[in-house]
Length: 251
Ligand code: NAD
Image (cartoon, rainbow, N blue to C red):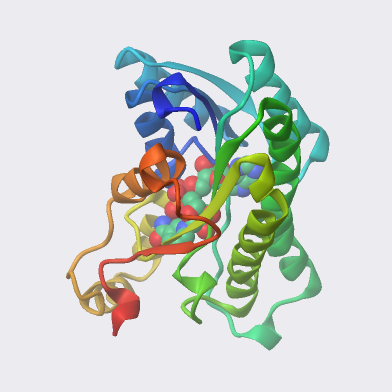
């Protein structure tokens, strides 16, 4: 398995929050990083942050609901940096906290298309290149909602699905030297959560008080886990949902 310092990493949703921090962490370890997002400004800003710190990165606009753009993302890693070793499939959208029967079909379809099928599209393109290259490591962003009901029904279903994909891919591609794991963040201080907090400060205070550590997670704490899951230090960790939640689910 390649060390992070010798590798090439793709991060989806790298223009903000958790994906920005994992892009930065990969670069700090010496990897070359392909940052992707639908948000051009956010993605370019992440690249600037990495370059300002002496790292190497490039931005590609990629909507994970578009199979051609996902293909182009992997092709960029190959064209710019010679291949692909690590991927953090992280792009996602949040729920609105509504109950199951109150969503319409379009909201369900959108959630599944971005959060679940989006991860599958990325895995498919990445795996083909990694098989060719002789191995790699992929981390998918699930959630505590991937292993519990801490989210609305369609968000929870999408995040459970990510863990299913991660487990089955582990079985399918172990012989090819590819490791897959999922990271399951608790409540992390990113624009996704900040937005919800601005809309309802009382609810945010209630949520924070319910986390044993007594604070939200820093996106850096998720990024550290993602990079560890791609490193040789986690060589025997395969097909696992790794919960990083300040003790939320321990209760
Ligand atoms: P964020 O909103 O800060 O970042 C998400 C990024 O994904 C944004 O830059 C956005 O532009 C991008 N994105 C959205 N749709 C996309 C698409 N179709 N194609 C490509 N990019 C797209 O949120 P975050 O908190 O950093 O979330 C990252 C991941 O972590 C998501 O999958 C989210 O579900 C998951 N997560 C977050 C938390 C949390 O508390 N913040 C908890 C559990 C899981």
